[in-house]
Amino acid sequence: MQPEWRFALATAAAVAAGAALAQPYARLAAPYYAAIDRLVARAHPWAIQQVAVLPDPAGRGSVLRLVGEVRRERSDARPAALVITRVEVGEAIETPVVFWTLLLAWPAASGRRRLVRAAVGAVVFLGLEALTTALQLLHSMAEASALLERGSRAARPDDPLTLWEHWGRFLEAGGGLVLALAGGLAALALADAIGVRRRAA
Image 1: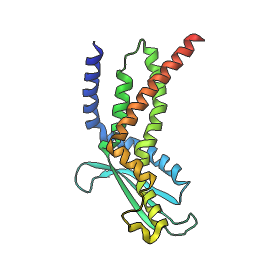
Image 2: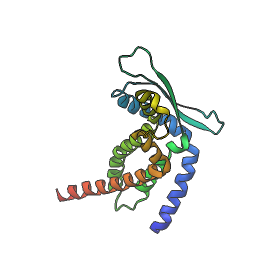
Image 3: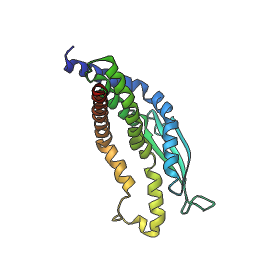
Image 4: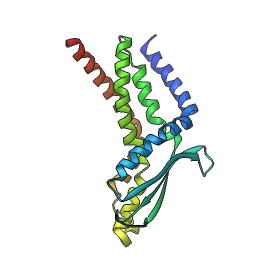
């Protein structure tokens, strides 16, 4: 089969699978997102209460919802803010659909090379998920912390956005797709480099 047709068919199958499996995938990935978010929260006065898939309050399917507490200082007995962040499950499945479609549809000379690519891809993919959906769930907590730190100046429209907000906007504006493509190409290159070293040895 011509490579162009292979990619076309793989893309069509991936889009169909993504639409059908978005909610199950989000439920499967939610514990991983929660683990990453709790790890990041250790460096901040935050506490993650829940990361779960729930019905969208607007009635548009399902969303990944993070519930967390933000304190001014870690030692504070009570939180200063309760934060709820929502990410549509369709956004959460974008990275795996693009990444694995690229990785699995890319021509390979042997089944062994595909296995190496899959192994390398799994490691790269976990990093991508941490950088995309997991961090996207945290940007509202970072924003709440910034508002608490700036106090009364927080309402000024000329106040700078936090780096977290910049990252969240980058992901929403197509950055997640760029990262998924870049991660897929990086995994392919790394897997091929490993294959070359093994043959040389």
